Each structure stands twice: as C-alpha cells, then as structure tokens.
Image 1 (cartoon, rainbow, N blue to C red):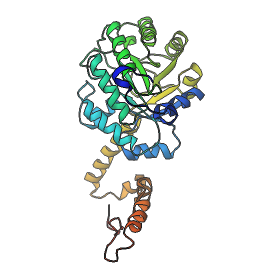
Image 2 (cartoon, helix red, strand yellow):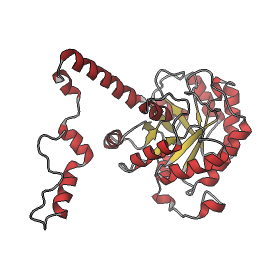
Image 3 (tube, rainbow, N blue to C red):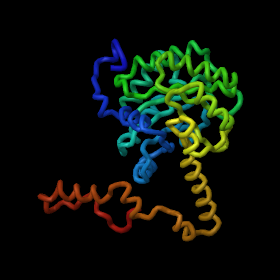
Length: 316
C-alpha cells in the first residue's frame, strides 16, 4: 500500500488499476498523451490508438470561460475526471494545479482524483494565484513547502501505482539549475517523476534529462516558451510522457469560430458539412446501436412498449 494510517482502509489490486496500466506503458517506452475535455474526444483518442489521455487544468478552465489562474474548484475537476474515466479504459493523467491548498488539502485532492478513476496526477510548485506555466509573473512556493505537499500526496494515495508527479516552474523564475535542484528534492520526498515546465530549448530538455534521470514529462503546448519538438526526439532524450495538453481544444474552438462565421455570412452550413463528423460516425462513437439492442432486449416481453432509443430519422 502507498498510504498509511487513515488511508489504508481500502485495498486495490495494483495490476487492475489505471495507475498500473500507465506505469506499465511508460516502462516500455515513451507515449504521446493528448489532452481531452469530453467523452467524444476521449473515445476518439482510444479509437485512434493512443495509450493514455490527459486532463489539462488550463483547458478545463478555458472550457468554463475562465483563465488559468487557479479559479477552478476541486469539485469541478473531480466531476470531469469521473466523466472521462467512465467512458474509456485509457489511463487518465490529471493536472491538479497546486493541489487546491496546503498539504492537508493535497491529501483530499489525491483521494478524490484517485477515487474518480484517474491513473495519476501532477502537482506544481507555484503560489496561488497560479499562472499558466508559459506566462511571466509566476511565483514559487519554498521548496520545503512543495516537499511537504508531495509527502502528503504520497501518504494519501490508496494504491501505490497511482502516479504522483511533481511539476516545477522554476526554470522561468529561478533558472535551470534551480529547477534541477528542486526536482531532486521532490524525488527525495517521494514523487514518482518530474514535469519540468517551460524549458526553452532542445538543449535544455537534454540537460534536464541528464541531470534528473527519472520518469520525465515533456509539455508540448503551442504558443509557449518551449519549442515543439518531435516525439521521437523527446523519447530519445529520455522523456516518457509527452503531453499535448490543449491541442485538440485549440483546433476544436478555432473550427467552431470558423463555423459560426460561415453560418452567419452564408446563411447555411452546406460548405461545412464535409468537415463534420457524420451522424453515423458520432453514433458509432456513442455506441448508439448497442443502446438500441439492449433496450429492445430488456423490453422484448412487453408488446405495448416502444424502445426509447429508436432512431426516428429526425434525431440530431
């Protein structure tokens, strides 16, 4: 068991856990992990052969019309985690920001995110109000406080395979050497791996990997401080989890803007149809036929019941 004391009340078989799946994946090599926000994106990722998915705090904030400055709540995060884990078998890594408070708050964050079905989470060493990792003006908590948060997280997890990663934003605030020193302190406190945020060149990614040989996360977010390096290059350097946190959302929201513009200007959507999921493609993702078949089977003995899932042809 990874926890102790009050956190030992429930035993989870490691080989059955989402965390166990994620650990086995990264033991065999690097993986591409796209950020997803909803069930359809999660199922598309699964269908297209991705091995894991990610929930970005920045993307979740944006989906609620909020900037990434620590405004989302633990309840909002946990609800989204539960929804994603309920529709796919892919292990989900979660951005838990600063842990929603002090070390005692971090305990509860880990317990709720793990119980919602996630494979693991990462915590960052920023002060509240936090900022997007690729913006200026960030402030860091003392290393000692972050160490306490990591200890709390490790103690709180029920399954030792639940992955606890420590993100450091020190590169942009204190420099690369300080980021390395913080990473080593976080590993000593029990973190399973390190997420060095906002490294500024391929050389820095390489130098960090040499200095901190552990499970490493690379953040390939667009329009930030880090160059968009090839997956194969990052894997070669030793990074195991390559995140694309907001890529799908940026694409989807830009397409939405274009769709609204065309609809407004043209008065119809005929030019857009070729760029849409078809009705059948969406139904396949949602498992529509399976629902219809089960509905008919459940009520087969009732001659006066019409299945609720029958497709009228006018459904959306």
